[in-house]
Amino acid sequence: MNLHLYNFDALEKELEGLSPLHRIAFAASCCQRLLLNYNAFSHQENWGNPSVLRTALDEVWQILQGKPVDAALIRRLIEDCSDVIPDSDEFTSPNLIYDVEAQEAAIAICNTLEACLDPTPEQIIKVATCVTNTIDAFVPHKDKSFNVSESKVGLEKLQEAIGSHPVAVREMAKQSEDLQRLNQAEKLDRDFVEWLRTSFDNDGKSLIDLA
Image 1 (cartoon, rainbow, N blue to C red):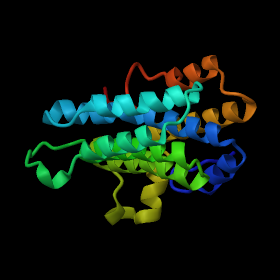
Image 2 (image 1 turned 180 degrees about the horizontal axis):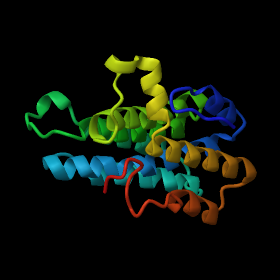
Image 3 (image 1 turned 90 degrees about the horizontal axis):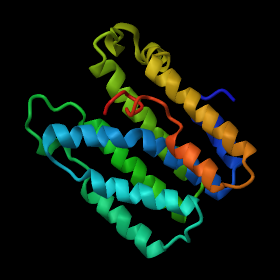
Image 4 (image 1 turned 120 degrees about the vertical axis):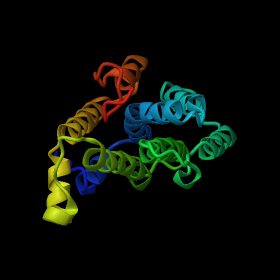
């Protein structure tokens, strides 16, 4: 497969070949790599509630291990997660850094919860879009070694440069690995789900190296 940070066509084709539960598993893995971004923002700004998102994502992992979907609970968790999405306009700190990354983490978990009720490829693409938005917000604005800008090279070249950044390359490799393993797994047994939940080896950091 040839996944690209800004082009979701290949991902959509892969998702179409997966079972609904396998699709949710892919989304949950993405969220696992995003969640620490929210934690970093919450710690920095002393705002938000990471445990709300953690509880919601844990519910998804339990569903993947065989727990029946409780639609009422899922809807309540979506409301809880929506309530802790930060609004950038509410913060006046001149050092506000990870607001977008926190927003995308929370939105991704909301979308994954929605996928538990409606696990279409399109719903999972929404989660992958949060990953792309996170990298798109982080690399050109917070990586001081990245010196490419849209004003200098145009949008297409900028996206090519972001897509070639080590953070993006690593994430696309992980998504490809997850999809390959999911394609090979007829059933999501407990060992496989645990592998998917813990297999991102980045010294306890998020996909953009936040802890």
